[in-house]
Image 1 (cartoon, rainbow, N blue to C red):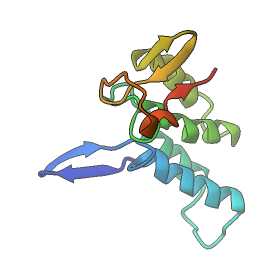
Image 2: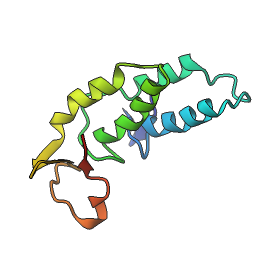
Image 3: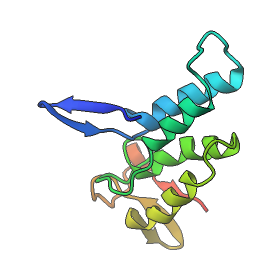
Image 4: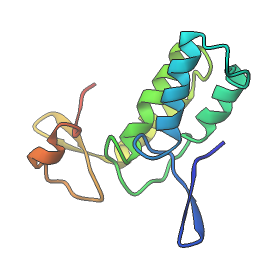
Length: 128
């Protein structure tokens, strides 16, 4: 299950936190954890299918909100629920494609921009 953006009649999958499957998955995960029984479709199989939408290796942006790093929050939440124990590991393995190291701190890149201006600085450092 993927969120698809039909920009200029060319569909593209959108796995991101701010505008895609990862963000939608986080919202559904919270409703699922809350035990909302009014959504009959919201079960482990539905969440497992949603996790497939975040199983990406290639994305141009590495940032938190609209890039690869943003796939982690939903993947970790699915792991913690015991629904998908491997997705977060695959995302962690792929992070090296998007991270730059500066004085021992890892930073994600947005659209190949390695600067850390204040406007984006809050989402750039990656701590391990």
